[in-house]
Length: 337
Image (cartoon, rainbow, N blue to C red; front, side, top):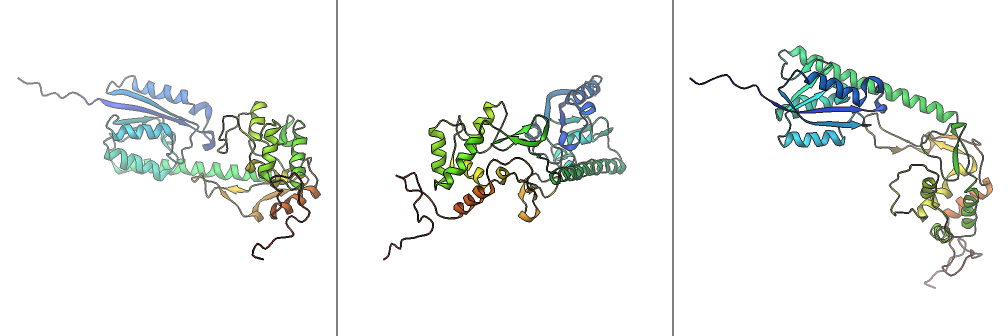
């Protein structure tokens, strides 16, 4: 006589954990370690779940799903390697109610993936009435609203800091450092003060930004990025192209155009459309928050604005000369005469 008792389904299970201070997550209760421990404890008495991988996105916001560990998990799901995903709660999975709904109700369902949020007592395998999904969508909207509220508070707090003249960027501009007594105050970096002054002086003499960069490299002067490295500041930028960063025309021009060197602090120059879109866009200049006489200047107003005038004119020295021609930017030769 054949045994008709079917074996229980074994789920190829991924544990997914996520944490982001940007979302206002509580580090103590929502730490990566705590999330893992809670889910592993949940699985102890459930042999039907066979652990495949633990996916960790530490420091990635929940308002979108552009996260490396999640995308790797999604790839394995579509390849048939995973058919169950377990999270601590819905907010760990995501804080964008539209996308959370799309993945759980649409993508996971199409790929026959079971989804469990332990603390929310939500399990797609056990949903047997419409109220379960109403609760699911309500919790997602609450998580989304929480992120929106955090974003508004952060923006408001930053605006207050900007208007009070507090420097709020991660790194001080070249020529300045953050005061050891107040990280929101800029003080002159005396080790490179003379270099900033010489850059403005060389431009006033008619040198192009490219030629100034060449001279600085010839003299063995560390570029802004390399100077930060020498000071022990961890600094990443898309502008770095060489193993040892060198001066170039762009880095010189950024210094020449920056009003920070006359003691003026310009902030709130970029923004994002909303808390879900992280791409930054440039604000109109009239909306910038500008505080004059905010910190000690390195160059005078007269020198700075003389240089701005030169930057607008075609005032470059000849390749074989060091000084500016008397009529540069004023007298032009018509080659057709």
